[in-house]
Amino acid sequence: MKKIITIIFVLILSVSALWFWWSYYYTYSDGNRSGLLQKMSHKGNVFKTYEGELILNSLMINGTTPVSSEKFYFSVADKRIGEKLMQFEGLRVILHYQQKKGTLPWRGDSEYIVDSVYEVRGVNGEIIKLK
Image (cartoon, rainbow, N blue to C red; front, side):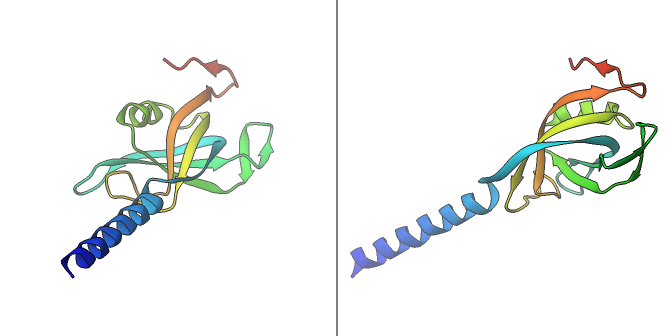
């Protein structure tokens, strides 16, 4: 009887660990989003995370001003990338993200986690080198 209880306990623990990994650490999708970096903030009561808004490219006037667009909300887990993005507010960027199935307080509010910035364009379209 003791052996059966131990097996059931280990099985429940294994299934729970697999579910937790699948829900919070498995990368459901990844890709790039490009647009105008509208907002970056560093917020949180216990866990400070970087949160941002990107205005996605859609309908533009004169090739520079977005007219009709939707927003892409994202979180940044890496402090170095978050601080770099804080400097790029108001510029056009290409972000690489990973989409997770769930959110964790120390990772951010969004299920979209930005892990790199590919390119930054200035107001006149010039490419700014990333250091």
